[in-house]
Length: 162
Ligand SMILES: O=C1C[C@@](O)(C(=O)O)C[C@@H](O)[C@@H]1O
Image 1 (cartoon, protein in one colour):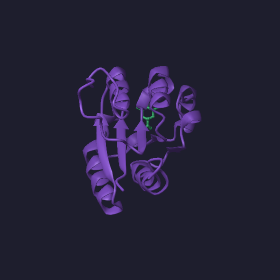
Image 2 (spheres, protein in one colour):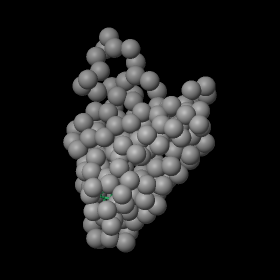
Image 3 (cartoon, protein in one colour):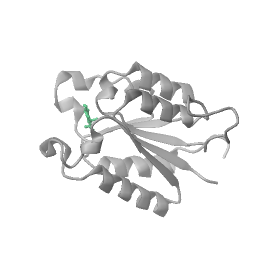
């Protein structure tokens, strides 16, 4: 059985480690993704990583997990199935019906993740378009949240029928 996790990071998360370190810490996205690949290997799962500052690119990448999307032609080999998505949608969490709809369309269980405690910040960050559809929500654990999400996804989220 192969289990594959897709880790998505949205706008400005390419700046982790540089951006507001008092809020987001000093760990870079590169560090997080390197650690994620190592952890996935140890857990016996596969992991794909994706970061984009663009809402449409994130929607396209989510669609691709179901073999859909503008970059997938009828003749293409079906994309690899993903058993779980871990998504830090950044600011799109609070604004994007499109990301929510894409996650609902592919119907793959997902974990919503935030490095900071979004409930202890500006009030607009307390609302999420994703939380009510997420299997789990992690926030305020810093970079460790990624590790917790991967462990949870690897253990609890399996491709149906496997
Ligand atoms: O870009 C981000 C990062 C964030 O998702 C976090 O990881 O804490 C929290 C969001 O409110 C913010 O827009």
